[in-house]
Image 1 (cartoon, rainbow, N blue to C red):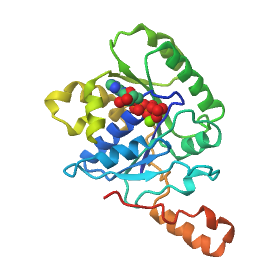
Image 2 (cartoon, helix red, strand yellow; image 1 turned 180 degrees about the vertical axis):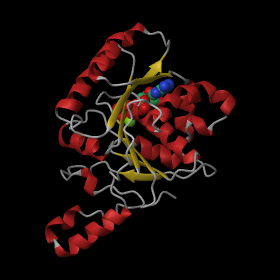
Image 3 (cartoon, rainbow, N blue to C red; image 1 turned 90 degrees about the vertical axis):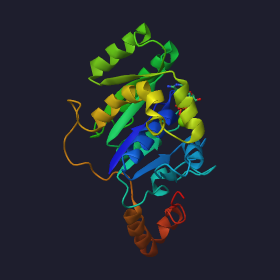
Image 4 (cartoon, protein in one colour; image 1 turned 135 degrees about the vertical axis):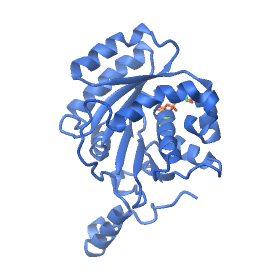
Length: 262
Ligand SMILES: Nc1ncnc2c1ncn2[C@@H]1O[C@H](COP(=O)(O)OP(=O)(O)OP(=O)(O)O)[C@@H](O)[C@H]1O
Ligand SMILES: [Mg+2]
């Protein structure tokens, strides 16, 4: 199972937009795909509910904590056993234990960043947090950055970020334009790969470097087998069996959280 985390602690950087477009790409390629939405705003879950009947199904797993809950999220979120690709939509402001949990789950981490100096500064701080406290230094997950909502691909504002990424040897994959097609797609429950190719050719083209990186065509991708990082239904069965013998974890079981998106 390929687990891709889309994350930036900065709000509005494009996490949900990227999540939905990555998920719908894999689904349209007939990969069994799931989204884990860790954001209490539930935007990815809302997008899944909007999806029309004629497009490929994507499983939705609501991993956002219940109000007032302090339990670790991974114990609540499940995907079907045969899932091939999981995209995790992270909430804004993520840090601490949740950040570590998300990094642990992931094979790949994609960080979208908007072009304003404030966003770039916040993203640089977030990347430091990811390495210093998020466990990225010891994780096997590959990390890359994409620019989002770019008006001009020659925008000089990314210069400082590119130098910072170079110093960390992190790849900057692509510029995603500011485009109404992304707004239209999210409104209709689609991704740009599910819309008219003639209309979305530019958006498709600019997203391809991300898929090439994920598919291993990028030079620094690790080539070994992709581990199962996200617990599948089989894992939940094991946990359920454990639960019958270990009363202390009863409250942490995933019972009732597994659901198939219709
Ligand atoms: N490339 C783009 N072109 C046009 N609009 C975009 C693009 N990317 C994102 N948007 C819009 O910008 C807003 C914020 O994007 P999005 O919801 O994807 O960010 P987010 O990082 O998930 O936000 P949050 O931190 O609140 O979860 C949304 O209205 C979205 O439709
Ligand atoms: Mg979001």
